[in-house]
Length: 125
Image (cartoon, rainbow, N blue to C red; front, side):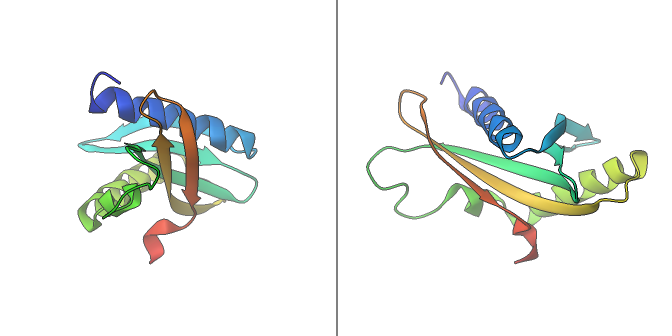
């Protein structure tokens, strides 16, 4: 990947494809509400899901010695995603239950998707 923006977009596209394979419908990608962004907005029969995607390149056989991609979703980032989700829901009312998820995308050094980890309702912890 050329830079972190390219890496992030690549991971977001991989995450969107993963969600589609799980029968989610992608409503939006890179949704902006003021200074806040949601990487993916998707839905299934029950939920409207706001997804933060974190992509990392694996440099050895172990994923990371000290942190996972999801650990980069700080409290401040969670508040920003939640604020953008509230703007989206105000503009697009739904009867579906909102949920905030995190998807980790692990890539090899040559850009191959090694693993995708979908953490449902990740902000409730």
